[in-house]
Amino acid sequence: MNIPFEKSRELQERAFQRLPLGVNSNFRFWGEGITPYVQKAKGGYLWDADGNRFIDYRLAFGPIILGHAYDEVDNQVIEEIRKGTLFAMTSELEIAVAEKITALCPAVEMVRFACSGTEATMHALRVARAYTGREKIIKFEGNYHGFQDYMLFSTYAPAESYGSRHNPIPIPSSSGIPKALNSLVVTLPFNDFEVLDKTLRHIGHDVAAIITEAAQDNCGAIEPLPGWLDFIRQQCNEYGIVFILDEVKTGFRIARGGAQEVYHIKPDLATYAKSIANGYPLAAFGGKKEIMSVIGHGVAQGGTYNNNKPGVAAAYTTLDLIQNQPILETIEKRGRRLMDGFRQIFDDAGIVACINGHPAMFTFAVGVEKVTCQRDWNNSDKDLYLRWVDAAIERGIMPDHDPREPWFLCYSHSDADIDETLNVMADVVKKVGR
Ligand SMILES: Cc1ncc(COP(=O)(O)O)c(C=O)c1O
Image 1 (tube, rainbow, N blue to C red):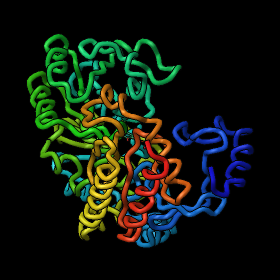
Image 2 (cartoon, rainbow, N blue to C red):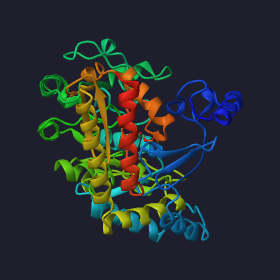
Image 3 (tube, protein in one colour):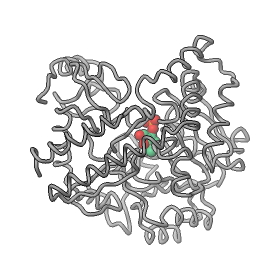
Image 4 (tube, rainbow, N blue to C red):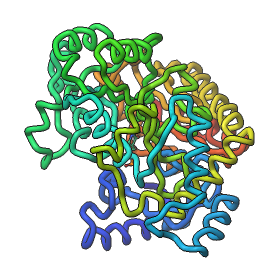
């Protein structure tokens, strides 16, 4: 790093002694001597431990939809926590948040809360299994649905290890995942109609759920091909499978009604976290009343912190602002300017790159014209992408240090921030080259 970085290095040395990799989530470790440690954040900006200021496009992996330390949300949280934080009883505020979620999300008739996206997908899978009386789950290569054992398969591996796309090998993303789960999790390439169709002809009646992100927002923001999500919907209808749409990243970010609204798709269940509470810990899963109603009738779901007051209070205000003010429209407009600007920069420099995703959450793959699944995204020039990211960070622009992760926008990013970002990226592409 060619910026002051002594304090971050010092903190990393200290953290190495007590925290594996010096962090509390593997994704936050960028490498020895290059991992930033944070001091504070406000609006669209983040300051690292050395006082370097960045325009923040990581936004904590997406939850910050309004801006860091957003006063309206924080004030509501402070007011509410003065009345107590946890009761193991249900409050009116929590019912109001459930009503807001069901009002905004077309496919959600009933919800239950959780604390993280991982828990939301875990609970949704159990409900789907209980409802169908089946055990197998289909997920798509490159999608990420949290750290629970059932879903940590084929998230990121060398393309060869996935085997033939007609007969994919589910690759656990960690040691410690029981081998027995390999027989319950089927991984398939995203956007591959033929392979999904063929697979369901064989095992369709044993499948409890197909879970997917609408776009691959944990792998280059790869968009669904026209008809892909509808095809999943139809196939689920045909085989009696529960369709779970993981809206942990898309929910309350790409539209008020999330991916359901953007892609006109009605899943049976959907999962939420991140933008629901602008960075406070709240998650939810919900969907058809008929399916959700199995909970409490032989199906277990709960958690001490599921209705934690900071999360619930933050969700109430965040959803209220999203519902009633042109927040997402403003984010979309600024994100569109950024996407168009990147396109211009690449075209001017004669660089082949495809830009993917929604303006509120997008990224680009370098050296490839088009990507439709993780297998072809793997052919993109990830090293060059990272060299550009390193150079951008040294110039005050911070996307994530992982080519899979999108650039996130928030309401606090200004037009001036977008101009600065485009100037920096034009300079980076010119100076770092290809
Ligand atoms: C689509 C998706 N699902 C689930 C999760 C897990 O959420 P959490 O990190 O809150 O457990 C993530 C996290 O990035 C995600 O992107």
